[in-house]
Image (cartoon, rainbow, N blue to C red; front, side, top):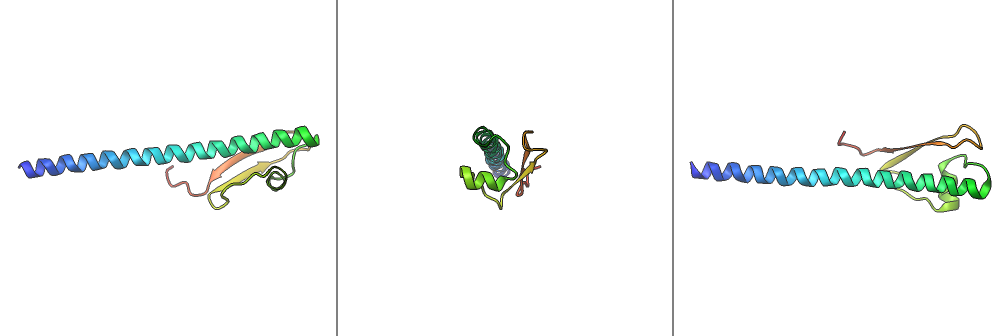
Length: 99
């Protein structure tokens, strides 16, 4: 009886630990994605301030402003509606197994 109680307590503790680690991992993934979005938005603003129009695609931000990101992990959706209308940007986590 005591051995089974110890085993149950052990399983509960391991489960709680695994749950905490997964929670931190998910939170870090979201933070990384938000940081990338902020970097893209910042570079778009800087590009517009210097050039007077918005970049046609993300590759211009990579070339001129040094934007870099893991292309195997993230996709940057970039929709432009005109040279003086701010583009719509979305970041998609290609490895998102959590949602």
